[in-house]
Length: 319
Length: 284
Image (cartoon, rainbow over all chains, first blue to last red; front, top):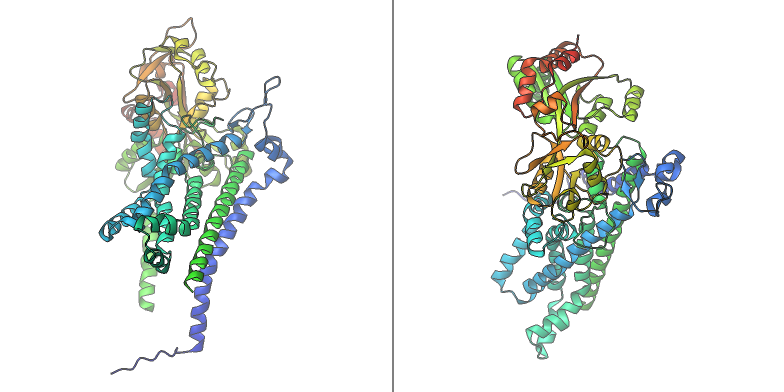
């Protein structure tokens, strides 16, 4: 019989193999860095070029502007106009509104399902629920958007008697469906990773399963659940196709959830393909891209940090 | 191993040579025109074996950008090029040559339950700029008007803005949807909705007849009224080339402008060019 020899054939091969694997890891890092640099580079004329600033300075993007003499100052997004108007506020409000509705819808469902799956469900039930909820994440967002555009919008309008068919509520709910699996997966993970020693200790001193779940496991896993929500929020901010199809895309300033709205991401998707290359409008769209990048990066970073902390804590307790 | 690589390379070369041997034309641009462009291409390829024509959409602006960047031979557009685009083309050494290939009427869609049958251009302007917000101001029961329109990347958006809104801004409350089909769908489901788009599209909605002003009578959009120019909201659809088309492209565009090509346009629900206009556009 042949003997297995685990000795590498040569030091050189080992060295090359190691380096190759390191290169693949750094490719991702470099790609992210380059993407950011490129997007930001296309946005810089807003800060540097006086010509672009005439239409789209940081001041014009943020504050109320008087567009016609004698009229009140307004925030307006009307990039294709005799006097282009590039206020980001209507888009910012729209983005937040959609994400807020999505969270209101997805957090109770996602967290509830996670508590059930990790604490109360029988093994068979859990093995059914987990893959099914995670399957939700596999639905292409364009399909969810289409569903919201055709079915959900009509149903909501008829039951609630809404003025606008396509609105923040409609888009937010569809967005929520996309966010549920993220919240569910992270929250469920956090709860099942609460050390068994803790559960056993609680049961040993006479707590019933309900008490174990709500006074022990849930508080211990809370940071993980919070991280799930934060990551879900990040997805809700960046998601494009659903809001593009289901929100009506009217850039209005309104706090009502039943008004139509327009988000950052949908604006980029709808306008970038057509914009005149190098125009102020083009620069502004890239600036929006930069903002989205920074937002989602910070949100995801926060979520990951919380998760790392949690892991440390559990392992600390175990040890 | 070496032999396999060599075989693969030879195969690749052969395939590449085969693709390059026939004359190949790419057409890109307006979503309004893309269906007609594809039909024309199919018919033309059937008659002229060996010619390969690839047609894709993306919007007038996308097509124009592609022409300027030299990535398409023909650009389909539902609007003329903007001044900035002409300048950009000149910078890159592209000389846009414009040919009208068909007409298109922009229809105003209303829900079938809406009692309104006609609107004047002034009323339409008021509705879409936001100075008229209630249906009772144009003769229908009291309810807020729900505005649907296209995204600002669409040629239809730009045309409607220029010719109906006199270049004023759309009302902020205008809901913009990706594509005419989405607008038609939205209006068909919304009793109080109003939308606009090509006349080949209206399924499940009705057209409003449009009055130029209060002294003229309202005109329904259809092939006759658009072709004769009596329907007030109509436009020409274009093909742009880099320089005067020669060779295969010249043959293609002249066939498109021929009676046969224009018949095909009519069959697809577009408006054929009146005879004089088609002849005036033929490339010498």
